[in-house]
Image 1 (tube, rainbow, N blue to C red):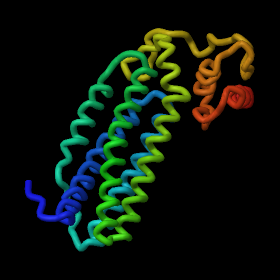
Image 2: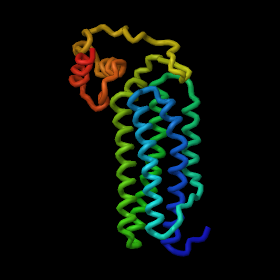
Image 3: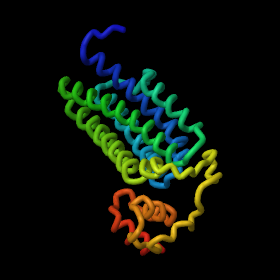
Image 4: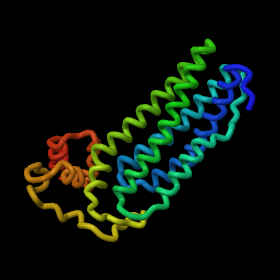
Length: 228
């Protein structure tokens, strides 16, 4: 590999980013299909749309420099996505697999954040402020996506996975063992009394309460009561 100057390396790294975004576009539909938590599935679906916009933004960056949008194969993201494929093929507890999907997705997000942070800095160093602003927009989007995945993990998915209630499936959506939806009666529907936040969250999930991952225990109980 020859690196004659910073601009040449920057150009090369743009090609790398253009390629890994296309790789991610191919992977996200499978990740969304594999996710069992509705909010996690929606996060993957929304990020697919966002990634399409990021590809278009990269095209604009290329054109600002007078370069043709080109792809240079990104081995790094390919390796991360290959690891994620193992999760897509996994069988076991739904929540544990969703937790693993989040982990796989965040590895990719962190790679992208590092890449776009570097590209933004190179663009500014080279006096390309308009290109730098576009790259910063994508960096902000990746940071927001990473933060959302963390919230989904910490406020629901990881808690349920840690409990290990044995909801095991073949990822076809049909539970093979575990308690039925109507098994929780302690404290009454919508009541927080005698119930953990995780138990209320599970009922909120069953009822399709939106925004539940960002609610505290009282808010969850109130939302469940209203949805019942």
